[in-house]
Length: 484
Image (cartoon, rainbow, N blue to C red; front, side):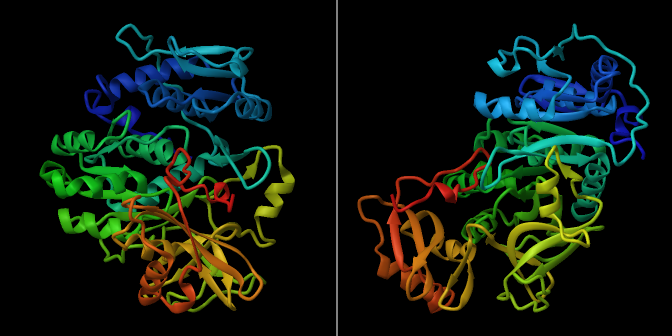
């Protein structure tokens, strides 16, 4: 296949490529630094990368890919047990880490190669990028509902087709300047947020740590695109009424993209009202990279994740595998996808790989959705935690959460189901109140939801919390919610 990063040799050497804080690299700098990394990996099959939000991570990943090695991104916040499992399972030949990085005990016996991006850093020629499209590019570990994380093997072709499909949907070019503050051990921050700009020949400005002040600064200084997760956009929505500079900066952006979890409709509406800009959502996961997106040249409904990207086949199915054909915004089915954007296997887990696919090659995502009458997809939750069967209805938790968040007394909300002798399952609302001293009551919230959706979707139980449990990407960890 063709090179993943043609701009490394085709872009002007002085074109900006990456900026992390005070460290900036041009395409000439990046080519030399990644060439030096690649030159030291001639015999490596698989390499771990200590994925801090720093330019060394980008150089390490691009250099390893240019050398034809597969990259295992390591989350610096992982505990010793998780790191030990990932290293034993993936068996990398070495770890790439910034100069002076203090690596934890599980990495102590692994050969280490230092990545340097200072003026004194060695430069080297880029090797020919002649790897096959089916060769592994990344092994990204993803946690399931039980057991240790599984390593999803993502081939080089999946990275290329996903980024090219997003370029088509978002009209993404080398003139775009992306800003984000996402972690670099996950496909959102790494594949979309680092490899995406470099494949286009554009540039990235990484915030290091997300802040609305950083967003304002970079968008006001020429950045054209912002990537974030719902937690970040919620903070933006909260800040907008008192921050006219932020509103102006967002209004001037070409593209605002949210992913990794559903963005509440209430936050969509607050941002659009304050800035005149809509936030585009897309849908993907580690095993599939990106499946759908709202297109910049098409209208969108808040709460939908758009239509299948070029090259992606997508269907909704019932529990028995029969297709859901209705596009009525109500008929719920599991999303299954097929295409060249998919991972190839769970490393060392043929049983899990086989279970993840149907006999005719469709990947079972475990995500539940409906189709709107314009063909767009609306995610209603995870099959394991967000599909509630109550009184003979199949109900997605996501739409109830959106309705709850429209209530002025609700700051955060999550919805789950729990066993009920009469209904099968009853709907439970977990709410962080806007005013802990005067929280809304169950009758008030139940009536609020019933008026917006339908009576059978109203919560039957209310549990108040100080905060919802969330992971590194801002997703609510519903399995941590319990009656205890």
